[in-house]
Length: 307
Ligand code: HSE
Image (tube, rainbow, N blue to C red; front, side, top):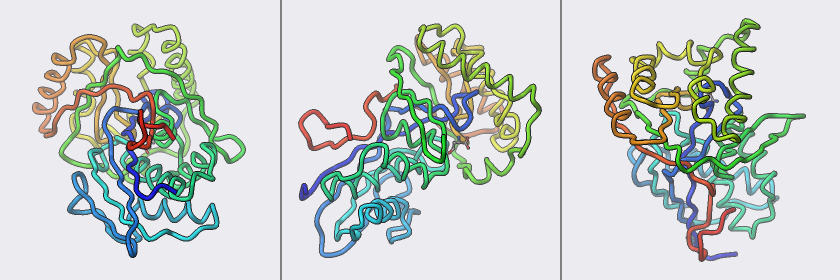
C-alpha cells in the first residue's frame, strides 16, 4: 500500500445535447485528492465548496470511499483526505461524479487495487444513478455510457484535441435533483426519434471528424426544453454561441453551465456568450477548456499513471 498518494480527477460534461444520460466528455479541469496516513479520519477542503462541504462521514468523497471499502470487505482506513477542488459545484460539470470516483479510487489504491475498472465504474454509477459523468471521470475522453442488465456498458472514444469547449458557468448553481425533477416521465415518440438520430449522429460525426454535423448532433428535445426556464438566458446563450461560430452549444449535464464547441478561436464565442448572459440578467464567468484524454490518475507516479 502506498503510504501517501494524490489522485487527480477530471471534470466532465454530460449529455452534449442529444445524448441525455448516455454521452459524456472528460474536461481538463481537475479536483485533487491527497491521501495520507493519520490517527483517524481527517478531511480538509480548499477551493470550490471549501466553505460549504461536509468534513465528516457525510462528505461525498468519504461516502464513496466507504462504499469502496465495503465492496472489498475492508474497513474505512484512518487517513487524512486533503481535497483541492477546482470543479465548480452544482454547475453541470461533474463535481459529484469526481467525488464518487475520487473516493472509490482512494479506497482502491489504499488497499492495493483489488477492484477492477468495471467494478469501480459499477460502484460509481450506483452512487450517481447514471453513468454519463462517472465514465469520463474515470476513463477520460468521450464516453458512450449506457445501462444493460443493471450494469454500465461503456465505450470510450478519443475526442479530437482540436475541438475545444467554451463553457459559461453561471454564478447561480442548479441542483441535479431539481433539474431532473422538471423532466416528464413520458415523451412524444417524435421527440424520442429526434434525439435517437442526433445521438447516433454525434458518435458517427466524431469518428468521421465531421464537425459540420455537430450543430445538429447537439440539438435536443428530451431535457433542454424543460430545463431552459431553470437557467435564465440559457436559450439565448446557446443561440449566441452558435451565431458566433460554435459547432453547437448545449446545457452542460443538468446545468447550470452552458457549453459550446469551437475548433478555431474561442474568444468571439466566449464574448458572445457573456454578452447574451448579461443581456438576460445572468451573471457568471467563461472557461475555455479541452477534453481530458486520460481520466482519473495517480499524480505521484512517474508519468501520472491512469487508474
Ligand atoms: N445526464 C444527467 C442529467 C447529468 O442530465 O440529469 C447530470 O448528472
